[in-house]
Amino acid sequence: MHSEGETYVDREGRALVQMAGRPASDASWPGQAQGVSELFSDVGSKCDFTEDQLRHSRGQYPIMRAGFSYGGGPKEPYNVASETTMQGKQRQRLLRHPGLKRFAGFQSSALSLHRPQLFLHIDDVVMGVQKHDPSLNKAFKRSVFPTATFNFGPQALTRPHRDFRNIPYGWCAITALGNFDHTKGGHLILWELKLVIEFPAGSTILIPSSLITHSNTPIQEGETRQSFTQYCAGDLVRWKAYGYRTDKRLRREDPALKRRLDKELPGRWRQAVDLFSTKTNHLQNELRSLRV
Image (tube, rainbow, N blue to C red):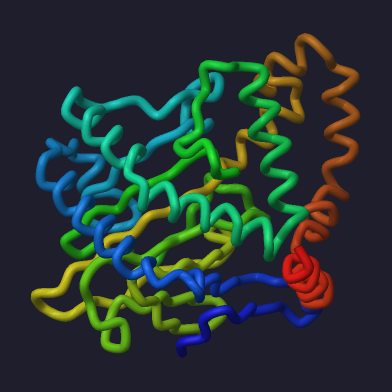
């Protein structure tokens, strides 16, 4: 199915998946998408990727990250480092590109429009973490998301997976790029929802990537597909809640706070569920945006 602008909700009307599409009135958008795709192709051809960047849990295609994150071993949040000098130079090309900046801003704005409570929650976490450690830098200053991943081609097609390190109740923003017939390939599959969605280049979709298994269908021979994603690691939320320290340090330095947080844990799922917009407040937010 191809339902640009549509919201997929659960049985209680909570928004699970948002087809954010593209700015309807921006005639320059297709050209911007083509420019970003060409940039991805050029950057991908110049980088000497590591084995982990070429073969990973999502598939077998080169990737590069930017921004800051937390989890997976380090004791505190960290800036995504340049694996090689060449990668560092090429990453800066990506981060400075006007078209990619616009895509990052559109993804962030789509989150703000369709799930404003989640947007404010992530913004509070990210700003708090950056205030605690000013050396941490988001991938894009005008985006609420702290981390971005660039999925290079020529055929960036993911295998079925879930992004377990992302905020469980959060949304990951995905923008498709490349030159392919979206009616014949490159569809987004959301396995638990039994949805197969046409996903044309230049369009954006917001999904809870840690909760729903997702993948792409193959594209045709001779076509290219890339993608650009932004997200927030779930461990950043815990880092801020623990007073910018690990679980071990919290137990040692403030056992009373640790006991209180542990006591609140059984009901925390309800707070997370409340961050999912319902169809009613989603429409109310759209009306407010039209009045501005």
